[in-house]
Figure 1 (tube, rainbow, N blue to C red):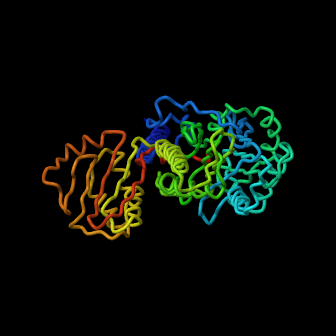
Figure 2 (tube, rainbow, N blue to C red):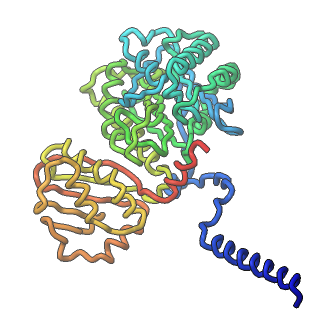
Figure 3 (cartoon, helix red, strand yellow):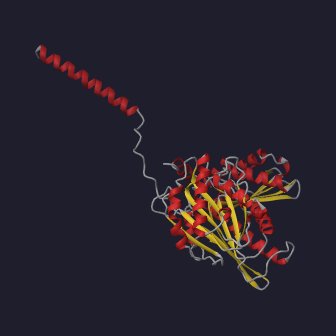
Length: 456
């Protein structure tokens, strides 16, 4: 081989060696990030009601409409209107978040004055999804005012009788002109039987529309209640929760209705949690049109008032449970019942500590009967507890008694129980008569996937 050939061969060998070196380096490197994946269409929660949206009674004095205004979403309903008859009274509860949205602040201001319920005026509730109009400053306030003014003019109502709510992304200006542009069509299309469309229009990450109803007899006549709700994530209410709208044809004074709503809120929407986060936009409005033939309910101590409040409470609890069953990524519905606390507030504190614990919730997701995590949550809750009096059960299975593993408990029994969809965890502190029940769901990989992509 001549000198020139040797020179070429040496160069070739050098480049081959370099290529092998680069190949080795590439093999050791992590794989390149894949192209952004398309967002999967959310499946309906496995905990959803098997029969879908329920049949709902028509509430005399309420008309509904919904349309696609493309506030954020494309090709789906995202604005709903509930038009209320003259004489309707309203009550409500709202988030106590210190970063409340502009619609929440506006509704609170309108419900506060005693003279805001103009007897001969109708009212309206308008809701959009996709954008919460929260953390939007003066621009958010102007958006609420523009929507209220346009709807009041179209329906011939005082602006003080227009209530709005918004749900969705925080911190982005609300394109209210898109909502104003559909007000005329909403008003034209409003009909008594369109509550299902209204329920669908207020959904964000929800996987199913939520509705519940009840009928109660008052003075020999039927009084009807129908409610809708949205909520799936950012659920740890401190007032009412999420967005909830309940309608009834009952006749009762506003003060009595408000008292009932406030009491039943504590037993329903304030007793659920999905992820321990309280929304900036939580709002619950209850509207009573007074159109039933039943006599007015005006005595708080009467059997009629008791019966009506119980029915209202059933509707509120049903909707609250549906929100938990639609918790983002949820596969388990969990009731946490705490008894034997020094007082009810300690029981509630303990129950929420268990329900909000990521360690407890992930154990439930993995169907792991890790009762030690429940002991941990009780201990951190701030409630008075005595380790040696503590008892724990899974459903009817005794797990721990007097601060020790129950002698009859078998891990296999606990594991088998955890494979169910509807679970009950009982804790008795052995200290007093205090008790509380809250409801929650498990915490799965899907919760992370949904929220990691929420604004994408």
